[in-house]
Amino acid sequence: MDLSFNTEQEQLRQDVRAFLAQECDRAVVRELEESELGYSPEMWKKMADRGWLGLVFPEAHGGQGKGFMDLVVLMEEFGRCPCPCPFQTGVLQSGLTLLELGSEAQKRDYLPRIVGGDLRFSLCLTEPSASYDPWGVQVRGMTRGESWVLNGAKMFIQYAASADYYLVAARTRDNDDDPSDGLSLFLVDAGSDGISRTPLVTIADDKQCEIIFDQVLVPRQNLVGPLHQAWPAVRKVMTLCTIAMCAEMAGGTQAALEYAVEYSKHRVQFGRPIGSFQAIQHYAANMLTDSDAARLSAYEAASLVDAGEPYEMVASQAKAVCSEAYQRVTATGHQILGGLGFYKELDMQLWYRRAKAMEQFFGDADYHRERVAQLMGL
Image (cartoon, rainbow, N blue to C red; front, side, top):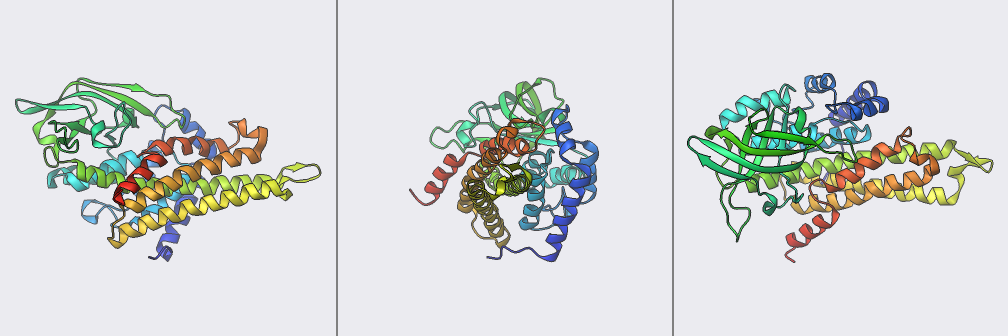
């Protein structure tokens, strides 16, 4: 298992960091949080022009055909920034799902425009139960003539208001013994009649919506993948996206650590920098330990993907580690900042709020501990 980065990957890291420093500094992050879209279409197009949206997609579909460790580099830098953009839902979740399940025509029609930054997608999986397991999908898909009809509610869908299309998981038949049987995926025009969206107020200001599907007609040819049997591919993509999010969280821990350490070197109390006090030093040491644990767990999972080895268990281990490490690091960072940590003008809260939000995506630490136990046969 090689957890090192090659020259090309290190150059990618430098390029992404320099780009984000120029295009998305912390002042811009705050502006984007307050904006209606939640991201900059101009910056999004620039990232597409650099090939970053297509990093892990095949060249045949407009991508670069790179490995998952390259994606880890990109996601780490997004987490450090932290960069508000629909990369996770619009490119990874939706694009990789289309790559896994889509017909050749669907891949040809949509993937080049996704990686080119011209089409925006949102994957609609979670519902009011907030479950990432198949039983949580209760939106119904029924046939009517030459169309499908969708009814139900999706919840916590990121960047839904700005998406052009939705990939919607729906239940097309019931199987009480196996909830994963009977799940199908549909490509839905976001402007279809019967769709209503309600913005949700979230801790990370990440533009989530509740989406109601009320008698929404979907052309029969917009079924994505096999009828009733979409779940295995959706689970695979969710696992890959979990690893990518772990890298993003790891990048956030590194940035929060650096911010707190730099503050402790310059904040003077009792005639000396607070970083000279043992309590602060121990805080920083614990933060470094957590940051390294998050980073290495994400690297290990990504390296297994590139090696073609089983990665499901390590992905869940990484998510459990990163979810808790990111929260501990940012909470400890606030302790080092003291009362100033409550000010939104300081940057620590940018990572702290995202740490809490990312804990819930793809399941929290307890969810993934249970999954590890299941994969161990317990």
